[in-house]
Length: 433
Image 1 (cartoon, rainbow, N blue to C red):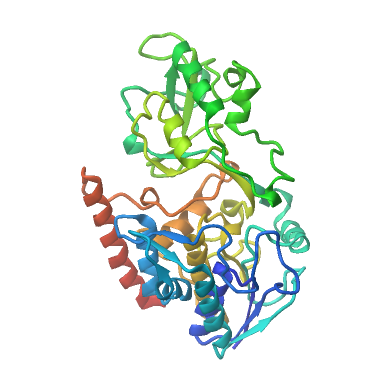
Image 2 (image 1 turned 45 degrees about the horizontal axis):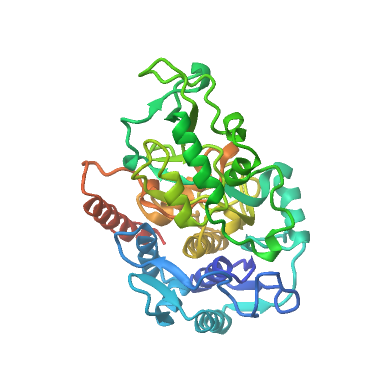
């Protein structure tokens, strides 16, 4: 039987190595630390949590809670280690970060089928390989991945606008229209009068910005300006940018509003919309406060806040299959944040699937696609089916799951039904493993 290379022992790489080894396949796990570190790491442990120690919600009324439960049922080394090193955090799963990464390191290193090799990989190896080197992939390997995928296939910073649950938009205040009525009406438009516009701009320029990490400063605003920086350039700058009203007459009045903010459909099911051109570095609480001033978004729920940070990630819709295999080379898998999943748990989940599928390939079996009704499957579906041109990383959220056959108005009940379906479908899918 063939052995597998896993490059990177972060959350995704540790999980991929564990899953492949648990499936009975020998794994060589390459990690460049401690010989070479990154600007964000402080220890030599695997699965080091470089930002928060929270793995977010643990309840089944929360999509990331459902994702964690799916992973527990699939013997995730990351989630079972997190459960063992948990600290009190209300409804969230937070861990003692040192105990957590030490436990993951110990379990993976002690697995009889895992051989850990401490060296930097600068080229993509031959043979079955999972690349899970994270958002701070070293420059030589980044260049090798870029050369393999083509120059357009790799981004160096994550500049994403906020994403909203469509069911929380006040549709009485917005209208469907494309600029100059070109093509089909594809955007929801939020009109503002002059007074609303200047109140909004005032709130935007005075809102609190998230601090930049030192290693993010260097490449930051390359070709992409945060909306609050644009607002600060001048009172009317946004009117010539993302808030331009030209060609967007309000069908109710027949007149052109003073300013318009456009919402673009973000997923095939049209349950999520993003705020066009509103990449931002505002703190999350400030985003909620300021962006709820937009007509129609007074009670909007944000499934993902806008972010701008350094984050090497691929154009997965163009490059990856739902199995996390490369479209160009079937024995090459990618996992973790570099695939466009966002968050600790999501990264580990992608590693879990890449590890399972790499092991299947090593055994001469067909890789599996997890059903879209599961959160783990919905993430794989989203990153491989989103529109490549506007692709940005995404967290697990219920908006990625197919709708239920019956409409449930109560949100908590709807989320419970989605969670129950996800776990039932997962149990059926486990029989293929």
